[in-house]
Length: 259
Image 1 (cartoon, rainbow, N blue to C red):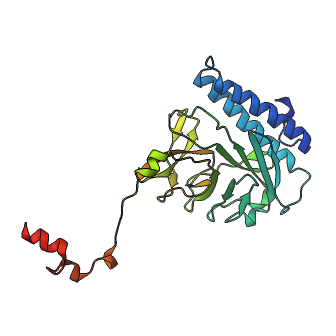
Image 2: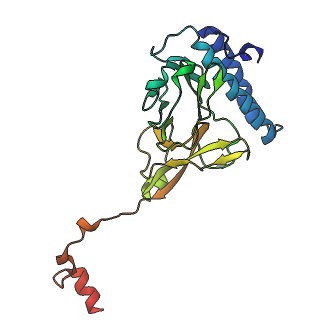
Image 3: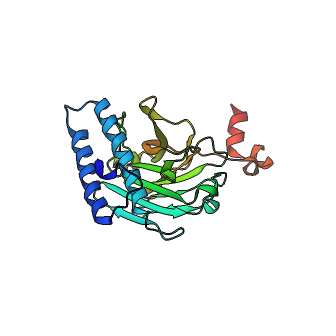
C-alpha cells in the first residue's frame, strides 16, 4: 500500500503489474471467504479502488499530453490511463484493450490553468464491493479525473458520460426457448449508503446483444451492471396504424364486431 501512497510517484509497468496482481488476488480471496463480512469487503474494495487510481496517475508522470493511453493488465485488475489537455476532455473517449471504454461528457468543464488532467479507468473483472444480488453482474469499472494530484469532483453533468463495461453473458437455453433476452441494469457504488444505487445512472432500453453493456452517468465513481432476462414487448407508433386496419374487411375486426 505504501507503494502507491503518493500519487505523484512514478511507477514502472512492472511495478504496477506486480501490485495489481497482489491487490486483485487479495480482494478475490476475501470475496470467496465465508468468514469475511460485507463490511470488510467494502473496506478492502474501497482501498483497492483508491490504490489502482493512484497507480494510474503514477503511470502518467513521465507521459506527455495526448499520447496514446497507457494500459497495464493482469488476470483480475487492469488500468488504462491517459494524460489530456483540459480543453479536449469533453467528448473524448478513453478505450482499453479489454473492452472497457468511457466517453467523457461534452458538458465537462475543467480549468486549464492547473495543467493536464490524468484520466484513469480501472477494471476489476471479478467485481468490486459486495454484489448484494443473486443475479449475474459484470465487473466493476472505476473512472477518475485527476489534476495536480487531486481527484476532481465530477457530478450533476447535463450531458452524461458513456461507459462500456465488458460482459460475459450466457443466456440459459430455457430462457432462449421462451423468448427471453438479457437486459443490463446499470448501477454505481454509493460509498455513503454502502450500497449500489441507480441514481444518476441510466441503462439502455435495448437488450444486450454483444460482449459489453452501455451505461450513461451524470457523475464519476465505480460502475457495474446487473443482468436480468425479460420477454420483449412489441411496440408500434402512429405510422404503423392504418385506417383500413379497422374495417370489417379485416378478419380480426370482423371477429370483434361479431362478438
